[in-house]
Image (cartoon, rainbow, N blue to C red):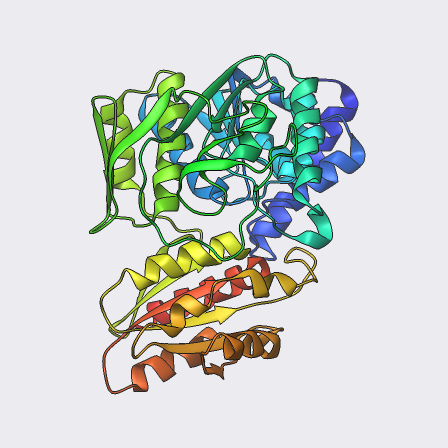
Length: 438
């Protein structure tokens, strides 16, 4: 490693020590920012630590969960891994994850889609796992074309990268058409899910003709084909069949049964993607299932808390598709419940929150005895959107108040807390504090 890179690493480690010991911060991104300020090319030498290679996990929804499952499966198979488990997925977060520890067998890195052209040329991932492409953070990302072109550009710079992709997504499939070596995965049957009001991916990315579907799962995901040019879902290398969504989830992949106590069709895709990546690099199915059994998220993704007898589920919901899937999940819960939506508009959330009108909040209006709270910097906008969906939402300042209001209701209820990016960590801290008081 050249002198400038060594200085960058030394300075970054000092910043990390200060953040963790004096500021009591997680230090998941700032050390990388400092290192890149000193040496903009430090990622390349750091990637040299990875003896067997690296896996980059990308996609609008599900990156952190899938990334961490892959990481843990590889570790459980006897390999050492460097990973940005906390979800810091910009270039600085990837650098930070590689700063600490000596050599490792694998790097498993969640990478922001627009950061791929910066990260890939230096990281040179052996594999890229691409989960989905949905409209998200319009201020920063723009329309989906911008995101797709960023990923295509990154993959063109690393032609040896093998793309493991969700072939049910026409956007991912279009990206795959630009890549030499691909491994498609998807669901090989109709799950008969309620369909979203607003759906992307209606038109073929190659010729502009309206796509036809044998069946939709949710959003633009499904068995699609173009009647004009023949663009279609590829034959699946990893196909989920016999999918069950009640009482947890389970599905077959060939002779292997995958099951989890988590729920939701989106978790089927996350688990399928993690299984495909793990199998591709040599992890056996038994080890992967053990990984799922041991998986207890602590990063705010379907994280569960108990607060004075009240069950609380915290999850990230940052775009229309994410919100719709979260609502599908809570509507499957037959028990009495409340839901607290928290919407902020910081830069990492997106200042433009017009996407709330693309969320199918109307689904909740059909739920009897559901109590809804609205919070965050844009609580008033959210309350108005919910009003037009036929839902009366009480304005609530924070999670603590939402828990107290839930506990004051005459019937015992589970509380779902759904937040966008900047509200997630504060909500998680509140719930940790409340649960530690017991």
